[in-house]
Image 1 (spheres, one colour):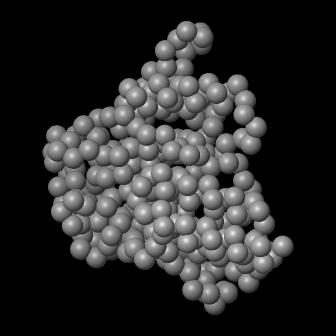
Image 2 (image 1 turned 90 degrees about the vertical axis):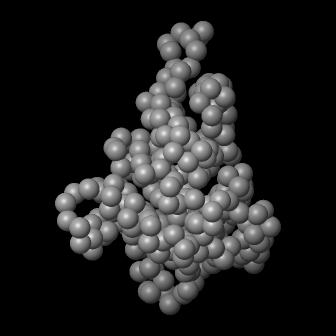
Length: 295
């Protein structure tokens, strides 16, 4: 089933898939930031965690709910389900996770503006189906040759031409299947995560390889996210750079690092194009005011 029931042009929710066949690329962290940005813009958001092993997005949402309860603060939370939860309540029996997943998505057709799907860091038929449902596909990759190899194969010699790797080929199959079934394209965006603050030869080589493959495979390159400790500190309390990071909420006063994390996340989501810039700009002004008042 590829986009036959879930089609934003016909009034249904826009399906956003966060995918990469390599674990640890920052998929769940980005998915949570996107979810909160959409919620704060007044959008109705459902999220789905397809990772049956790690379930990082599910734990992120749970941490957010617990922190809201502990602090007594109102935090925006999506309608969230994991494939494991859906399996517990599904009455059809069996282990057809693809059928389970698509049946559940059908129940969200008229109640939400966006469905954000976090996929596992491995290759599976379920993940391939999710990619084929995507109106927007976002792929974060860590800024290293090891992580780049999932999308681009780079030869050992200087004159070797970069070629699409296994994930890029799998995505091409999924997106071609979507076009064949319903005639609609997917907007595929790749961004680099954990960028070093100082440019290096490695950085330039990765930039060059991505530029070549982007034209060949058909994805856009969006602004990346720098290596910041703050992104790791958000997870235990379920927060994001889009939350009001004052002392009562986060436990510490905001700093310029918090502000820059929000600026980078805002620029990334703005480039993806899921929200009008003015809705995201309000969040940035909030962050600036918080940092200025704390300094």
